[in-house]
Length: 464
Image (cartoon, rainbow, N blue to C red; front, side, top):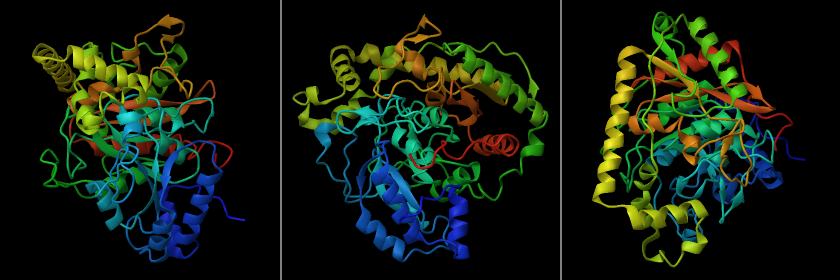
């Protein structure tokens, strides 16, 4: 009988490898067995033979030496499917590793399979025609969110300790909040996106889903730093894990604002109450000064969603429009709307929205160092959708589902989701936003929360 996969965090798994108490090959076999037995539908592809070969010669002295890692199916892995979670691209194979994956390999990690995503990362629900619905390990009738839903489900579901993710509108923070994990969206450009980088809307960043703050710090240690194939990538920053906790004293006296709804979103009252309590507690614990700020982010109209449609058309190529019926309804509708409405005037309105958002966010961070908000408007909704149209019985637009996370993507600043506990039996996340290049502040804040109010590393009940 195969033992269950490691139930701790990634860093403790590496420690177990180094001490000789556990082996990479044994952990990989446990992980593969858990994937086979799982009802989460968190993986769309496995490369077991290559992973076994890598595990047999793993160098456990490396930062992630011997660790099986899931890779979000929107990330490129040489020789693996590059489907964008889309039926028309199901036969596409990548001929290169992304910079992130290559750096993880160099750090000893063992990519073994692709985790499910929403199609082209387009919605915060992981349900596609290619893969079906991915389920939340806290309640399998609910979604883990998206677009990094498979990664979040696999990590919170006890299958794997870490998986890659991406955040172009909340796609790390949203599933982290829905599944009880910490999730950091870095400053734009912190982790390179090459080779073959598509600039698109300049909103998406790379990252991971993991169980602990130190896991995130180690991931950023390994993957951050300039790469010439991403001209927008930032210079390398050292010492993420080593420096954890070192800035806590310096945070005392800094200013914060609490705006659970960011002045725009409709947030469920019980979720709002929990987030407000967690924000006030954390501010008190760190000695932050809470001040009132007139914070109301600009409305993000549907035009903003159209700005990324060109990238989708580029990927689909001459398969579109004949493939339209094979696309999920949201993507098919977005492409059709884009074709009929996207023009130079629309582009001007989109850029005007970006300017207004940037000015709003800059003005806020001129006044405070942190903004506390909810990660999601409500707890996780049904795994097959549709996206919620009501909160506490009040009708809300579909844009409500990303209203709390998208501002940081447009402005490019870092933000972290911190697990605060449960509402109606499902996890809730506190989101903390900070100015550009202040990820270490956010990690230290999350670390303080983790130490004083530790969250479950996985959903109850063992591998799901």
